[in-house]
Length: 138
Picture 1 (cartoon, rainbow, N blue to C red):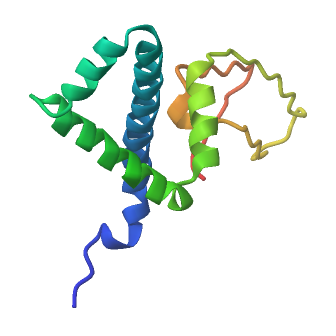
Picture 2 (cartoon, rainbow, N blue to C red):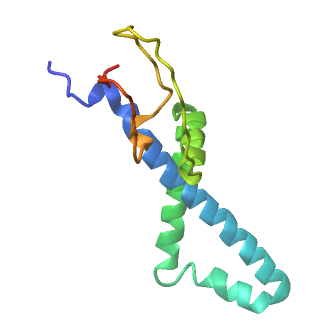
Picture 3 (tube, rainbow, N blue to C red):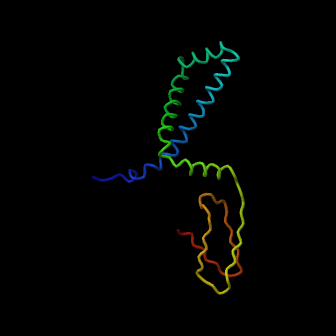
C-alpha cells in the first residue's frame, strides 16, 4: 500500500484550522457578552436578537461558529500553542537588530551561527573589508 505524501505530516495543517476555530470561539464569547449587556439594557431587543437565530442566516452562522469552536477545543492538545504564541508576538513586533562579529585576521572557514529565522527577515546586510563567503545551509 502506498502512503500518501501528506499522511505522515498531517499536523502541519492543524495550526491554521485551530486559529480559525479560536477566532470563532472568541467571536462567540464576544457575542454572548454583548447579548448579556443588551439583555440588561433592553430586554425586548435581546429577545429579538435571540429570535433572529431561528430566522434567516444567523442560525446556520451560529452553528458554524459553534462547530469551529468545538474543533478548536478538540485540537488544542495536538497544536503547538507555545510556538504559535511566540510567532504571533514576533509578528506583532517589528524590531531592528545589529550584531558586530570580529573575525581574527588570517582565519578562514570560521563558522558563525546567527540566531535568525530566515522567514522573518526583511533585509540582511554584511559588510567586510575583505572577501566574504556566506552559507545559509543548516
